[in-house]
Amino acid sequence: MKKGKAVVVFSGGQDSTTCLFWAMERFEEVEAVTFNYNQRHQLEIDCAKDICKELGINHHILDMGLLNQLTSNALTRDTIDVKDGEEGELPSTFVDGRNLIFLTFAAIYAKQKGAKHIITGVCETDFSGYPDCRDMFIKSLDVTLNLAMDYPFVIHTPLMWLNKAETWKLAEDLNALEFVKNKTLTCYNGVIADGCGECPACHLRNKGYEDYLNMLEEGGSN
Ligand SMILES: [Zn+2]
Image (cartoon, rainbow, N blue to C red):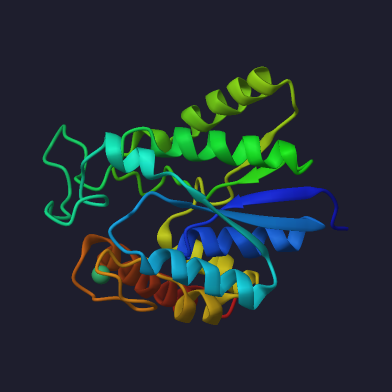
């Protein structure tokens, strides 16, 4: 039985859209929050809007331009190339403090709405060097948010231990595979659905999908 109220941190990408479906299956009331930090692709915001509209989800876009003022990296500056980090370095797409800030604002928003469940698509399995995607960080922040606002927040991370193939499988289990495949934007070059095929995000997404198809073949239709 569905109960409770949840807020999904939503970017319009594969992971957070899968999380949105996950939340819709579990909670009575679901809202989505998208952060606008003047990211490279304004299209991301439009994509998030369209998805929420289609699914009938209450959608809130919060202005986080401040993050853009503070950090310069490949997601906030057109002049910086998207690339994986050299050994011991963070990738150029890492935005310092992003998940800390986003989840904190999502929590403030959730409390005003009487929601205690917060859902985020962070994942430690395909750990690309983002410290704020680690389970340890999320657990620590959950405690901090509870203490900060004296409110029983629960942060849910349905993708934390899934690899990309398993994330596609989860979308399938939620009857959302086609939706996620065709309507989400993961590509760093702003190409919806299957993407440009060239950037690191596309490589990860497309390889995950291939692995998922292989997984189906090996395991039968289960
Ligand atoms: Zn791409």
